[in-house]
Amino acid sequence: MTDLTHLSIADALAKLRAKSISAVELTQAYLSRIEQLEPKISAYITVTAERALKDAEAADQARASGDERPLLGVPMAIKDVLSTTGVETTCGSKILRGYVPVYSATAVQRLEAAGMIMLGKANMDEFAMGSSTENSAFQITHNPWDTDRVPGGSSGGSAAAVAARMAAGALGTDTGGSVRAPAAFCGVVGLKPSYGRVSRYGLVAFGSSLDCIGPMARTVEDVASILQVMAGYDPLDSTSMNLDVPDYHAALEGGVKELRIGVPREYFIDGVQPELQAAVQAAIQQFKSLGAEIVEITLPHTDYSLPVYYIIAPAEASANLARYDGIRFGPKIDKNDMWETYKATRGQGFGPEVKRRIMLGTYALSAGYYDAYYGKAQQVRTLIKQDFENAFETVDVIAAPVTPRTAFKIGENVNDPLQMYLEDVFTLPASLAGVPSLSLPCGRDQNGLPIGLQLIGRAFSEDVILRAAHTYEQSTEWHTALPAL
Ligand code: GLN
Image 1: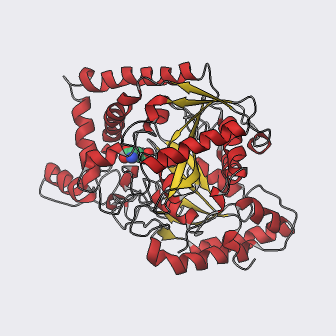
Image 2: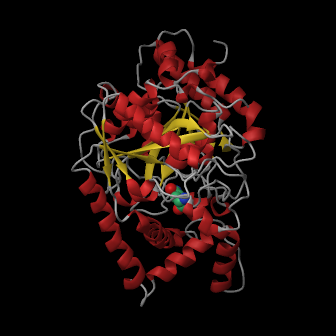
Image 3: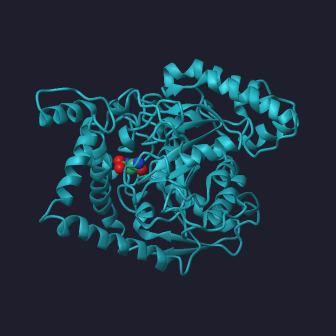
């Protein structure tokens, strides 16, 4: 093989361990690929080439002296919402331009401790608000399968980087679908872990009760390897769960016999792109032929997920974003008095979608409306969570589409926020319920664009959905296809 960027993380690690390639060679291959394709894709806000090569040299030296850390020498992209010591972290926003954190997010720090090489910070919708990465204040990321189309969002830079072989793997974050949807649009694997499985420390907050950090890669096995390193209790995040982390690698084997797979009727509805629906149905049939039992189920409160999410997420965002006032965080635009200064700073620092969310959230939380909106949304959220609990009494995994359609055209939704919100209908329920959910390639539409299959599991059963996903993946060819570019 000439181009090392074709290697999966597992294959790259095998070659690194056998010393048939070096971390410097592998990192150099990714950096060359970035140099070649970044003008076309714009996946990165910051490329940390020098640092990556230095880290790669150190990785090779460590390996020479017997170091066998699990990700030693693996080059990855990190979504720019994750704090990285000494490397600018913008969250895709002008308001954080120039902000250089003095600490790294626990997830990043654990990956680095395991030997990961950071290639750079991936583009994203501003503060992770969006479904297309068009809300980035800096650039539009292009879908590697068709550069006139969006990569999905908000972790579009991460997904595009992995699909275009500009990174071996990536971290994204998922508040309402932002790992799964871009993974689906770009034809890669993405996992939103259970809420509490991975520490949120150092993840710049959007919707704190929803935010999850998730791995993206070209195979299920690679996603399992990344999750393995970052999962587990962290005293710095009081919502991280003190639970044993299973051996996700060992969990991949065993097949899907005995597994009961639920097909929720609320996810197979009119308005979903027909080829997408057919591909997901075919994947479900594939599970059946692999020995799984297919059970039709109902998640009756599915319809409420969208309105509930678009109250709770903006409400939490409006509180979380109060700190960007030019005094605590962000550059200050000085005016004559405090209010003018405040308005100018926030008015120019935030893009339109972020302002919209702050206004929606502030309204939903205001005295007199709190009970009618936020309080009610929390009650309905409990019903959505109970839907999943009920379903998981009879099934082990739920199979569904990730998105209602494949990657749409750049610009198509930008003037219609409601249409943009509708793209999230199938990913929001698992986010509100806090359960793990994975997206993996299961087909292609008539334009050759990737289609994603969503597998949702019980809380903290990442091992089960990884096994189901791996079994399916190994029985099909979808994950081997790469965009032409
Ligand atoms: N598209 C959703 C939103 O705009 C989800 C974003 C996310 O998961 N970060 O809020």
